[in-house]
Image (cartoon, rainbow, N blue to C red; front, side):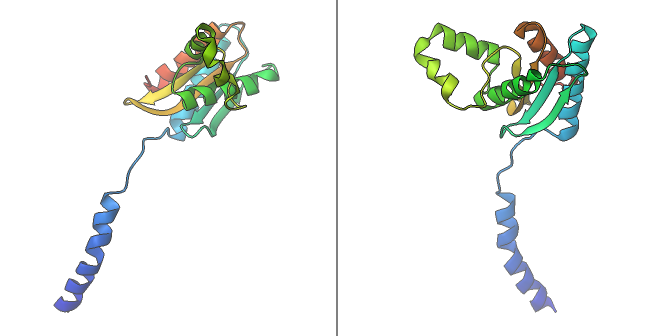
Length: 160
């Protein structure tokens, strides 16, 4: 009996040691993504703007997409593209647009991926310093307003 236990322990020890060394990656839980999207829609709705809000994971895959009543049909693609761009590039889309506008040699960034939307209204989502996704808002009269609503979404979940 003791011999069997010792043999089993010897066999399982390397597996346990290996499992402890596996990398872990922070991620954006669905409930937090939903809360952020709802807060962003509410912030824009409070100002009379019908928008769509997209939240994407770090991988760029859409986690949440909310479209306010009467939001224009273009707002879904706009918000999703802005969220994707922020998650992919790890930066706000307004800053990226300024970077490209001020450095024409970087104009090729616009053509890097057809999903990129380089207009204000997208913000990266960072939690504890880790990039876990992006939020994009589309449909307000200006990108600055879209960005303000996106910021409200981040604030609702304590993201940076």
